[in-house]
Image (cartoon, rainbow, N blue to C red; front, side, top):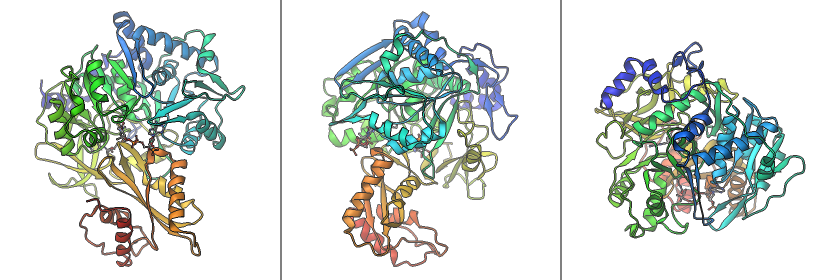
Length: 629
Ligand code: COA
Ligand code: AMP
């Protein structure tokens, strides 16, 4: 069957489609049906089944694949390589689960994981789901304040962390950041487990912090605890319009079924193949395609601790692909832009045999045609763009390589996957004609594995995603679909920007800038960047009477965002202006400011209060080197 037949078979009978996909998962008690719509427009899947995430990702593979590598850890920043088989992984995970259980962690309890890219991070995720608890991984590039916000929102009983992460040229000590976060938060975890790495030793607080290894010594290995299909497996916070992140809930049953389905149908890999997603466990790509999907499907996954360039050079990706026989490689376009900038002729590819590689997949941000073409010419494999979000956890639109390779149209992530009916709507919720730009909405219900709600925030879930277009999920992306049914993702419709594939909230950055004592008013917009896709650019108006040099204040603004949100925000561009352009009703014209910075033609908004301010913005962005040449 081709793509069109499979898509139609899902449309004709979604229940049968997903129940068939669910057969590939081990259930302690089979679900009686796929969709549970009793609480519509909030939907659940496989709610009356009983299963366990870790069982499906680890234990069930041990009899047939016990000696197959489950994880290959390759860390050019520490000069370490290590292989963990499925059998070894089961022992490691059960032991850590036992230590958690012994300290009172059980079904439904939350555990935060704040770790670098080491195999223990995967072991931690699996150990939490093994005992029916719920993990929330926080990306290591976030600062204490961001961690504290997440601690208060999900109220973890335990935090699993490490002494440090390693960034090129520096060791990032995690423990002081963790201590700072625990101090800032109103909620306190009962205990922490700290993995001591040789690059930094963390000091442990007596009675609260325990050494990762010592804590496990006396523990008895724990068995899998089976949970209902609608029980959350994890919460992953992602950026929204404000500084308060959204806790995306991932339900157990649908997550297992849908991720497993994608491995063959979307990525065209078979159990036993090596699958590599070069991302970080702190992001959804890391959750779905470093940890869960490859393991659920019986593949080998790679945990890579390094960067595409500079660790030690821009041939690292090629070395890893050839050395570990990677069949399917997945990363963000920004990684390829970084390599292309460093090694435009692909000199570092020489000497690496990449015949093992079938396909390169890109996601996380718009894949620009130049980068796709360059990667395709260099690697001589299909380069497949696909579109998804933290909220969905897997592909909304893609090219289903395991079903049929559809013709690639550069700039489009191809077509909707089964489970997703995409509509392009105008502001009143009416479908726009083919080829016209609008808001991208998905007909409810969303498929299995996607978010059923936000953690502790059902109202916010309804407001953010369901209210704008009744009967649809509002993706927050704008774009169009063409005469062949291909979708084109053009921009966000909210205050979210995408910096090096990392999703960040400009609203959150504005909240930080506004807390600076000399800042009276501010705006942050996303502007184009040749490497990272977008960068945040801030405009601040100073409080009356402030006479310190502007440079001093902008440097403090940069420091403040780095300290409160984290280095990952890459907030370095900020200018002092007298006033911000606004409409007569006082709304800041952020989109106009972004267009000025990007040098894009725009029509002066009819409602602008004082057009002369736009010249001041032009001058300010020029001072920051914008528009780019
Ligand atoms: N812990 C602590 N700090 C971290 C961190 C972590 N886990 N991850 C990133 N940072 C820091 C970096 O050191 C950098 O700090 P600096 O301002 O002092 O240099 C800052 O956060 C920005 O990091 P990053 O976005 O990685 O930018 P970079 O300039 O170091 O590297 C790329 C640029 C393109 C090479 C890099 O972004 C990359 O590899 N991207 C791959 C895409 C990806 O993984 N996307 C995830 C979603 S699929
Ligand atoms: P995240 O939740 O971090 O995965 O970010 C999701 C957002 O990244 C989407 O809503 C899009 O704005 C953007 N995005 C992800 N993949 C693509 C893609 N293939 N093309 C264009 N934008 C993308």
